[in-house]
Amino acid sequence: MSKEVIEKRRNAPNLVFDVDNGSSSDNSSDVINFSSPNIKAEVLQMIVQYLEKESFLTSVTVLQDEANMKIAEMESITAQMKRLRKSILEGDWEWGCSFIKTLAKKHQKRFLYALYRQEFLEL
Image (cartoon, rainbow, N blue to C red; front, side, top):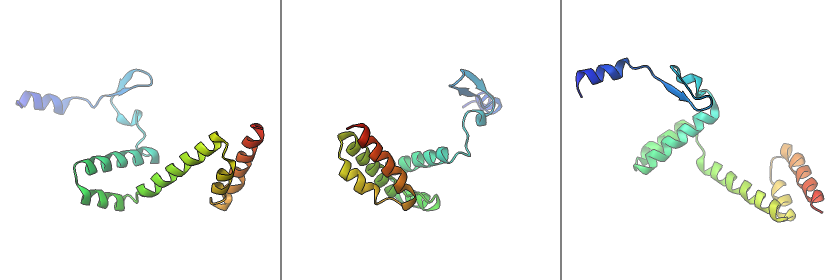
């Protein structure tokens, strides 16, 4: 690269295009809230996926340990929630009820009420 190109890139403002209102801004914090835990988790997940794709398995393990990522647990919970949704949509009320009873005590009452209410509404 020539010195002119390098100098232009160095002096160029950091413009970010805001999809919501169709404008650009000089500050990236206007568009993305980097302090949001959801954003942090998604960025970490993308980095982990890239490292796995490039076969940097040691780096993946270190990053997951340092970030306290529990990917296997999250995938398991996601699969269980999909199964619960499917059972509700198919009317398999017994499975849904038995699954909800395995949840933490503080959530059981609300989930059971919602399940029984939905079952009653579909009668």
